[in-house]
Amino acid sequence: MNANYWKSVPRKSIVLFLLGVFFLFSTLGFASDISEMGRQPTLRYVLSILISGVFPVMYAFAGFALRKQCWKVIFPLFVVHFLLINVLANQLPASPLPTQMDAAEIARMHARLSLDGAAITVAVGLGYACLLYVSITEFRRYFRAHAEITLASEIHQVLVPPIATKIGDFEFFGRSSPSGEVGGDLIDLAGTENHWVAYVADVSGHGVAPGVVMGMVKSAGRMLLSGGDDAGHLMTRLNEVLYPLKKPDMFVTFCFVAKKGDALQIGTAGHPAILQFSAKTGQVTQWESPNMPLGILPDGEFVGTEAPAESGDIFAMYTDGLLETANAAGEEFGIQRLEAELQKHARAPLDAICQSLEESVNRHGARFDDQSILLIRRS
Image (cartoon, rainbow, N blue to C red; front, side, top):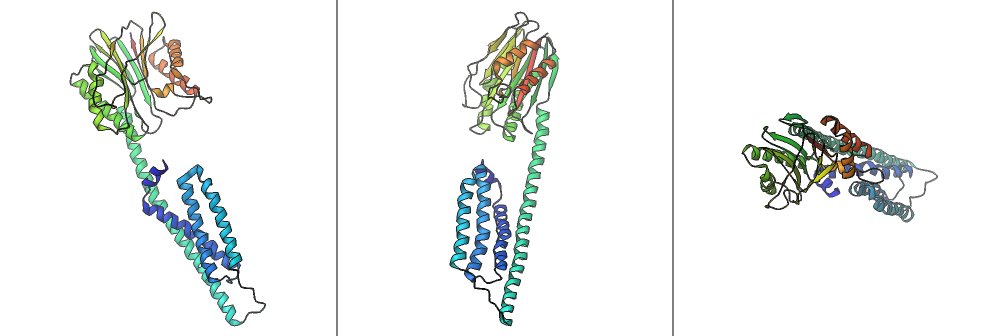
């Protein structure tokens, strides 16, 4: 992360920032000469200015590069800094203060102190100018990036809107809540009364890059479904499309429930199990498929299975952001708690079930990942 940070900052800004630090702290060398009434030897005078400016530059660099571990470098640097100042004072002592001063000595001291005062003014001005330039430049970069992230967030809201609808005998309700401005989760529903597909996808990682891949998943999924591709081949086709279009270390977990005629087909690809609540028995069944996530290998077959559904049954699809929410003791929410909440509120409207599940997760612990839920009920 630190390496990426330094790569993202222009080299000119880094150099000017460190120069600003040098100029501001070099004034301590001039100030020490004033306290000695300009009686320091020239070599000590120059070295004290350089030491006063260079060591703060090293402190600043260590602070940015090492962050919380910077003390491991700053403390030894401070010891060396302190020793060098004392060595200079002992090896190059100031000349003794004369009891009487003639006109020439007074003029020399006046010139030296005037030089110190002017040098302090110039050094402070240069340091301030460098830091001001860096601040303005980096603020501009920040606001540009912030504007782009805001735009990406707006696009994300368009791509992943809440779902609250009914198709034939099935009700649907779902929503996705990103952990940041842009998320990598996707919930979607497409089709007609006789042939629809509802699915949930979760792109690995956080931020803008997963959000871009998430948009690709939706575009590819909608294109494949509109082209008449059977839902049973959806994961295979998506894998073929996504594999060459993403970074090698990224992948997509995926799950779906599809209706074609009178049959329901379900499948998962590296995704948490789809839960089915039975209105008849009150029990919850976990549906999983032995498929790896999408985008890991260039090809392969992704299998699904048929699932019976009676009136009142509920299918719950969700992302691992709910299951992995941990409390202060490090205990994750887990699938058992999710099942229990689903059984507890299964007779309520779908929006109320979704609200109850989210509130239960939020009570359990703080969220660090995108969280999405898509519920389907046969009415």
